[in-house]
Amino acid sequence: MGRDLAEKFNVARQTFEEADAALGYPLSKLCFEGPAEQLKQTEFTQPAIFAVSMAAYRVLASRGVEPQIAAGHSLGEYAACAAAGVMSFADAIRALRSRGQFMQEAVPEGQGAMAAVLGLDADAVRDVCEAAAKETSEVVSPANLNSPEQIVISGSAAGVTRASELAKEKGAKKVVPLQVSAPFHCALMQPAQDQLAEVLNAIKVSDPRFPIVSNVTADVTKKGGRERDLLIEQVTAPVRWVESMRSIIERGVSTFVEVGPGRVLSGLLRQIDRAQKCVNVEDSASLEKALAGN
Image 1 (cartoon, one colour):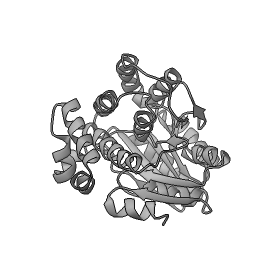
Image 2 (cartoon, one colour):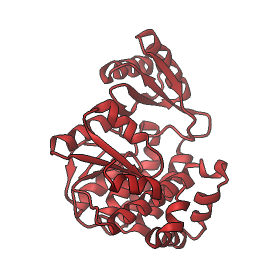
Image 3 (cartoon, rainbow, N blue to C red):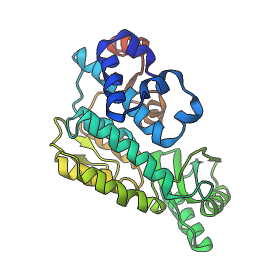
Image 4 (tube, rainbow, N blue to C red):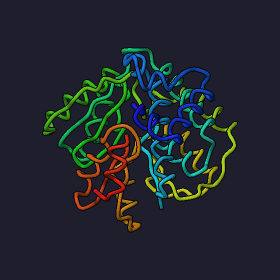
Protein backbone atom coordinates (compact mmCIF):
# COMPACT_ATOMS: atom_id res chain seq x y z
CA MET A 1 0.00 0.00 0.00
CA GLY A 2 1.61 3.23 -1.20
CA ARG A 3 4.91 1.60 -2.18
CA ASP A 4 4.57 2.29 -5.91
CA LEU A 5 3.95 5.99 -5.27
CA ALA A 6 6.93 6.20 -2.91
CA GLU A 7 9.23 4.48 -5.43
CA LYS A 8 8.23 6.70 -8.35
CA PHE A 9 7.59 10.13 -6.83
CA ASN A 10 9.87 12.04 -4.47
CA VAL A 11 6.96 13.93 -2.93
CA ALA A 12 5.30 10.63 -2.01
CA ARG A 13 8.53 9.20 -0.57
CA GLN A 14 8.96 12.38 1.48
CA THR A 15 5.38 12.03 2.74
CA PHE A 16 6.10 8.56 4.15
CA GLU A 17 9.34 9.82 5.68
CA GLU A 18 7.34 12.63 7.31
CA ALA A 19 4.85 10.07 8.64
CA ASP A 20 7.62 7.92 10.12
CA ALA A 21 9.19 10.96 11.80
CA ALA A 22 5.87 12.22 13.21
CA LEU A 23 4.92 8.83 14.68
CA GLY A 24 8.38 7.70 15.79
CA TYR A 25 8.09 4.27 14.14
CA PRO A 26 8.40 3.02 10.52
CA LEU A 27 4.79 3.29 9.35
CA SER A 28 6.10 3.23 5.76
CA LYS A 29 7.52 -0.28 6.27
CA LEU A 30 4.19 -1.42 7.70
CA CYS A 31 2.33 0.05 4.70
CA PHE A 32 4.70 -1.45 2.13
CA GLU A 33 5.39 -4.85 3.69
CA GLY A 34 2.83 -5.56 6.41
CA PRO A 35 2.21 -7.73 8.35
CA ALA A 36 -1.45 -7.47 7.45
CA GLU A 37 -2.60 -8.48 10.96
CA GLN A 38 -0.86 -5.48 12.49
CA LEU A 39 -2.06 -3.17 9.73
CA LYS A 40 -5.65 -4.21 10.46
CA GLN A 41 -5.43 -2.89 14.03
CA THR A 42 -7.19 0.48 13.94
CA GLU A 43 -4.38 2.40 15.68
CA PHE A 44 -2.19 1.48 12.68
CA THR A 45 -4.90 1.38 10.00
CA GLN A 46 -5.93 4.99 10.50
CA PRO A 47 -2.46 6.61 10.17
CA ALA A 48 -1.60 4.23 7.30
CA ILE A 49 -4.62 5.13 5.17
CA PHE A 50 -4.03 8.81 5.95
CA ALA A 51 -0.37 8.60 4.84
CA VAL A 52 -1.20 6.86 1.55
CA SER A 53 -4.04 9.31 0.88
CA MET A 54 -1.79 12.32 1.53
CA ALA A 55 1.00 10.85 -0.63
CA ALA A 56 -1.45 10.45 -3.52
CA TYR A 57 -2.89 13.93 -2.94
CA ARG A 58 0.57 15.52 -2.96
CA VAL A 59 1.50 13.75 -6.18
CA LEU A 60 -1.69 15.07 -7.77
CA ALA A 61 -0.95 18.58 -6.45
CA SER A 62 2.56 18.38 -7.93
CA ARG A 63 0.85 17.79 -11.28
CA GLY A 64 -1.28 20.90 -10.84
CA VAL A 65 -4.48 19.16 -9.70
CA GLU A 66 -6.14 20.88 -6.73
CA PRO A 67 -9.65 20.28 -5.37
CA GLN A 68 -12.41 22.87 -5.40
CA ILE A 69 -14.05 21.08 -2.48
CA ALA A 70 -13.20 17.99 -0.43
CA ALA A 71 -14.75 15.34 1.80
CA GLY A 72 -13.38 12.29 3.55
CA HIS A 73 -15.15 9.20 4.84
CA SER A 74 -14.59 8.95 8.61
CA LEU A 75 -10.78 9.04 9.09
CA GLY A 76 -10.55 10.35 5.51
CA GLU A 77 -11.86 13.68 6.72
CA TYR A 78 -8.47 14.18 8.41
CA ALA A 79 -6.76 13.88 5.03
CA ALA A 80 -9.19 16.45 3.63
CA CYS A 81 -8.30 18.73 6.55
CA ALA A 82 -4.54 18.28 6.13
CA ALA A 83 -4.78 18.85 2.37
CA ALA A 84 -6.80 22.03 2.98
CA GLY A 85 -4.34 23.29 5.59
CA VAL A 86 -6.72 23.05 8.57
CA MET A 87 -4.00 21.22 10.50
CA SER A 88 -0.44 20.13 9.81
CA PHE A 89 0.35 16.70 8.41
CA ALA A 90 2.19 15.74 11.61
CA ASP A 91 -0.63 16.87 13.90
CA ALA A 92 -3.23 15.07 11.79
CA ILE A 93 -1.42 11.73 11.68
CA ARG A 94 -0.62 11.81 15.39
CA ALA A 95 -4.27 12.65 16.14
CA LEU A 96 -5.35 9.67 14.05
CA ARG A 97 -3.00 7.36 15.94
CA SER A 98 -4.62 8.57 19.18
CA ARG A 99 -8.08 8.29 17.64
CA GLY A 100 -7.41 4.66 16.73
CA GLN A 101 -6.08 3.84 20.18
CA PHE A 102 -8.99 5.54 21.94
CA MET A 103 -11.54 3.77 19.75
CA GLN A 104 -9.86 0.41 20.34
CA GLU A 105 -9.89 0.92 24.11
CA ALA A 106 -13.45 2.32 24.37
CA VAL A 107 -15.18 -1.06 24.04
CA PRO A 108 -13.66 -4.38 25.15
CA GLU A 109 -13.00 -6.77 22.27
CA GLY A 110 -16.03 -8.88 21.38
CA GLN A 111 -18.56 -6.60 23.06
CA GLY A 112 -19.17 -4.36 20.02
CA ALA A 113 -20.15 -5.13 16.44
CA MET A 114 -20.98 -3.59 13.07
CA ALA A 115 -22.98 -4.92 10.13
CA ALA A 116 -23.79 -3.73 6.62
CA VAL A 117 -27.50 -3.72 5.80
CA LEU A 118 -28.16 -4.00 2.07
CA GLY A 119 -31.43 -3.14 0.39
CA LEU A 120 -33.22 -1.11 3.09
CA ASP A 121 -33.55 2.68 3.02
CA ALA A 122 -32.25 4.93 5.78
CA ASP A 123 -35.63 5.39 7.48
CA ALA A 124 -36.23 1.66 7.62
CA VAL A 125 -32.78 1.02 9.08
CA ARG A 126 -33.32 3.72 11.73
CA ASP A 127 -36.66 2.10 12.65
CA VAL A 128 -35.02 -1.32 12.92
CA CYS A 129 -32.24 0.04 15.15
CA GLU A 130 -34.68 1.88 17.41
CA ALA A 131 -36.82 -1.25 17.77
CA ALA A 132 -33.79 -3.43 18.53
CA ALA A 133 -32.42 -0.92 21.06
CA LYS A 134 -35.79 -0.73 22.83
CA GLU A 135 -36.22 -4.49 22.85
CA THR A 136 -32.72 -5.33 24.10
CA SER A 137 -31.85 -2.17 26.09
CA GLU A 138 -28.60 -2.21 24.08
CA VAL A 139 -26.92 0.41 21.88
CA VAL A 140 -27.40 0.05 18.12
CA SER A 141 -27.75 2.80 15.51
CA PRO A 142 -26.92 3.68 11.88
CA ALA A 143 -23.19 4.41 11.65
CA ASN A 144 -22.36 4.85 7.96
CA LEU A 145 -25.06 5.99 5.54
CA ASN A 146 -22.88 4.92 2.63
CA SER A 147 -25.31 4.72 -0.28
CA PRO A 148 -29.02 4.22 -0.92
CA GLU A 149 -28.25 0.49 -1.05
CA GLN A 150 -25.83 0.16 1.87
CA ILE A 151 -26.12 1.35 5.47
CA VAL A 152 -23.79 0.15 8.21
CA ILE A 153 -25.12 -0.24 11.76
CA SER A 154 -23.02 -0.19 14.91
CA GLY A 155 -23.39 -0.89 18.61
CA SER A 156 -23.19 -3.66 21.17
CA ALA A 157 -22.91 -7.21 19.83
CA ALA A 158 -26.39 -8.08 21.14
CA GLY A 159 -27.94 -4.90 19.75
CA VAL A 160 -26.45 -5.37 16.29
CA THR A 161 -27.45 -9.05 16.23
CA ARG A 162 -31.09 -8.21 17.01
CA ALA A 163 -31.18 -5.26 14.58
CA SER A 164 -29.77 -7.55 11.89
CA GLU A 165 -32.56 -10.07 12.49
CA LEU A 166 -35.21 -7.33 12.34
CA ALA A 167 -33.67 -5.90 9.15
CA LYS A 168 -33.99 -9.29 7.45
CA GLU A 169 -37.60 -9.55 8.62
CA LYS A 170 -38.24 -6.08 7.18
CA GLY A 171 -36.96 -7.13 3.75
CA ALA A 172 -33.23 -6.41 3.69
CA LYS A 173 -31.59 -8.22 0.77
CA LYS A 174 -28.63 -9.10 2.95
CA VAL A 175 -27.02 -8.26 6.29
CA VAL A 176 -23.27 -8.73 6.41
CA PRO A 177 -21.40 -8.75 9.76
CA LEU A 178 -18.21 -6.68 9.43
CA GLN A 179 -14.77 -7.70 10.70
CA VAL A 180 -13.98 -4.58 12.73
CA SER A 181 -11.92 -3.96 15.84
CA ALA A 182 -14.51 -1.66 17.45
CA PRO A 183 -18.10 -0.41 16.95
CA PHE A 184 -17.35 2.92 15.28
CA HIS A 185 -19.67 5.95 15.01
CA CYS A 186 -22.09 5.08 17.79
CA ALA A 187 -22.73 6.12 21.40
CA LEU A 188 -20.35 3.44 22.73
CA MET A 189 -17.50 5.57 21.35
CA GLN A 190 -18.22 8.41 23.81
CA PRO A 191 -15.11 7.69 25.93
CA ALA A 192 -12.98 7.87 22.77
CA GLN A 193 -14.67 11.12 21.76
CA ASP A 194 -13.93 12.69 25.14
CA GLN A 195 -10.25 11.68 24.98
CA LEU A 196 -9.88 12.80 21.37
CA ALA A 197 -11.35 16.21 22.22
CA GLU A 198 -8.35 16.87 24.48
CA VAL A 199 -5.93 15.93 21.68
CA LEU A 200 -7.64 17.96 18.95
CA ASN A 201 -8.21 21.00 21.15
CA ALA A 202 -4.44 21.19 21.71
CA ILE A 203 -3.76 21.35 17.95
CA LYS A 204 -3.39 24.62 16.06
CA VAL A 205 -6.00 24.92 13.32
CA SER A 206 -6.49 27.31 10.41
CA ASP A 207 -9.37 28.01 8.05
CA PRO A 208 -9.35 25.61 5.08
CA ARG A 209 -7.97 26.74 1.71
CA PHE A 210 -10.99 25.09 0.07
CA PRO A 211 -14.35 24.05 1.56
CA ILE A 212 -14.68 20.72 3.38
CA VAL A 213 -17.96 18.81 3.59
CA SER A 214 -18.30 17.39 7.09
CA ASN A 215 -19.43 13.82 7.79
CA VAL A 216 -21.55 15.09 10.69
CA THR A 217 -23.50 17.84 8.93
CA ALA A 218 -23.15 16.82 5.25
CA ASP A 219 -22.59 20.53 4.67
CA VAL A 220 -19.63 22.80 3.96
CA THR A 221 -17.35 24.07 6.71
CA LYS A 222 -15.08 27.05 6.06
CA LYS A 223 -13.76 27.68 9.58
CA GLY A 224 -10.94 25.67 11.13
CA GLY A 225 -12.36 25.82 14.65
CA ARG A 226 -15.74 24.60 13.49
CA GLU A 227 -14.16 21.75 11.52
CA ARG A 228 -12.20 20.66 14.60
CA ASP A 229 -15.43 20.56 16.64
CA LEU A 230 -17.03 18.41 13.95
CA LEU A 231 -14.08 15.99 13.91
CA ILE A 232 -14.65 15.51 17.64
CA GLU A 233 -18.40 15.02 17.22
CA GLN A 234 -17.76 12.64 14.31
CA VAL A 235 -16.52 9.87 16.66
CA THR A 236 -20.04 9.07 17.90
CA ALA A 237 -22.07 10.56 15.00
CA PRO A 238 -23.06 8.70 11.83
CA VAL A 239 -21.16 9.32 8.58
CA ARG A 240 -23.75 10.98 6.33
CA TRP A 241 -22.00 10.02 3.11
CA VAL A 242 -24.98 10.00 0.74
CA GLU A 243 -25.97 13.52 1.77
CA SER A 244 -22.33 14.65 1.65
CA MET A 245 -21.93 13.49 -1.96
CA ARG A 246 -25.24 15.06 -2.96
CA SER A 247 -24.14 18.30 -1.28
CA ILE A 248 -21.02 18.34 -3.47
CA ILE A 249 -22.98 17.46 -6.61
CA GLU A 250 -25.38 20.35 -5.93
CA ARG A 251 -22.38 22.71 -5.97
CA GLY A 252 -21.70 21.84 -9.61
CA VAL A 253 -18.65 19.61 -9.24
CA SER A 254 -18.01 17.75 -12.50
CA THR A 255 -15.32 15.23 -11.52
CA PHE A 256 -14.74 13.31 -8.31
CA VAL A 257 -11.25 11.99 -7.50
CA GLU A 258 -10.94 9.26 -4.89
CA VAL A 259 -7.50 9.72 -3.35
CA GLY A 260 -5.93 6.85 -1.39
CA PRO A 261 -6.01 3.05 -1.23
CA GLY A 262 -8.85 1.20 -2.93
CA ARG A 263 -11.96 2.19 -4.86
CA VAL A 264 -14.66 1.79 -2.23
CA LEU A 265 -15.83 5.40 -2.42
CA SER A 266 -15.96 5.29 -6.22
CA GLY A 267 -18.29 2.31 -5.94
CA LEU A 268 -20.49 4.10 -3.42
CA LEU A 269 -20.71 7.18 -5.65
CA ARG A 270 -21.96 5.01 -8.51
CA GLN A 271 -24.75 3.80 -6.23
CA ILE A 272 -25.55 7.40 -5.20
CA ASP A 273 -25.47 8.97 -8.69
CA ARG A 274 -24.31 6.97 -11.71
CA ALA A 275 -24.12 10.14 -13.83
CA GLN A 276 -21.08 11.47 -11.93
CA LYS A 277 -17.58 11.04 -13.29
CA CYS A 278 -15.22 9.49 -10.76
CA VAL A 279 -11.56 8.45 -10.98
CA ASN A 280 -9.22 7.11 -8.31
CA VAL A 281 -5.54 7.65 -7.56
CA GLU A 282 -3.66 5.10 -5.45
CA ASP A 283 -0.57 4.30 -7.56
CA SER A 284 1.25 5.49 -10.69
CA ALA A 285 -1.00 3.56 -13.09
CA SER A 286 -4.23 4.97 -11.65
CA LEU A 287 -2.62 8.44 -11.53
CA GLU A 288 -1.82 8.43 -15.26
CA LYS A 289 -5.28 7.08 -16.04
CA ALA A 290 -6.89 9.83 -13.96
CA LEU A 291 -4.76 12.58 -15.52
CA ALA A 292 -5.71 11.28 -18.97
CA GLY A 293 -9.34 11.77 -18.00
CA ASN A 294 -10.26 8.08 -17.99
